[in-house]
Length: 311
Ligand SMILES: NC(=O)C1=CN([C@@H]2O[C@H](COP(=O)(O)OP(=O)(O)OC[C@H]3O[C@@H](n4cnc5c(N)ncnc54)[C@H](OP(=O)(O)O)[C@@H]3O)[C@@H](O)[C@H]2O)C=CC1
Ligand SMILES: CC(C)(CO)C(=O)C(=O)O
Image 1 (spheres, helix red, strand yellow):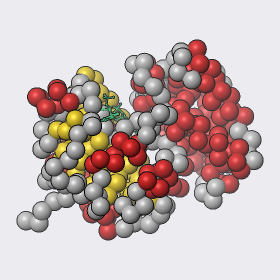
Image 2: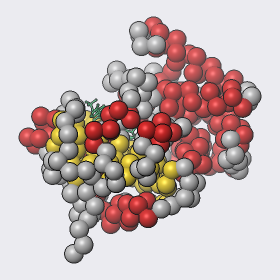
Image 3: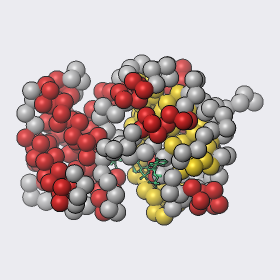
């Protein structure tokens, strides 16, 4: 049997724990770097309930944030929230070896560049997760549904490292689409996240059904998707208008759903406002594209943050 690549998860919350468990199922050695959950995971491992079965596992090594690795991992998978004030390059630096491939499973747009600049010699694989999962208590994750990954080499292409990792995820039991144009796929995913995630926060943690069924809600979402599309097109990623209907129809078919940003808001955690919305508005400004709905939502969220002392 050939030896499987070693994996190190930095940020083993809902997403890191779930995809770490999938790679563990595929036979990879999986280590984790933890902050607040270090003690509990060292003692009890990571517990994951899932429609795929019990995915609980014990990481081969549990490191504490600020530690140093015994060996460089083949793949470092970064799954922390993308937040202002969190320097992700500094966070992963102690764990990156000369041959480590850096894998991002995080939401947002324009989130790879700073890492590509910090680690110009290391291949970067960018992934989009289509999944409903949340941490319910320290070291415990509930995977509710879905789980597909879309992944590609950043900034474009599909290299051998990306191919190998995608095959391991598939072996572990999830669906994967590999793409030559992962940045375009980020824009496609933002058609959903950029309207729904921030709006759910303004609407006090509203789920998808409440957002779409409220008088004017669907129209607002459609307008916001249209604005994201216009910015994407200006950046060289034109998309078919039919994607607006597809996003609305697909969301209506799901049970009422609270996205990851709504859950962060409801649990009094910082939200990924700039990764998901602010960066899109900044690109729109650079491109000279008017995005009045996106801008209104962004400014409103900034006001809320100012009131909460988080600006
Ligand atoms: N949950 C979901 O359903 C989906 C999430 N996503 C995206 O996936 C990404 C991860 O989200 P999710 O897993 O839900 O977030 P979680 O909050 O569940 O997990 C983030 C993890 O990062 C850890 N972390 C933060 N800083 C450090 C540090 N310095 N050292 C070690 N660990 C650290 C946190 O630890 P601590 O507890 O100490 O803060 C936590 O375990 C986000 O970009 C999100 O938008 C995408 C699709 C769906
Ligand atoms: C698309 C969705 C809703 C789940 O994959 C997500 O990205 C989120 O919860 O932020």
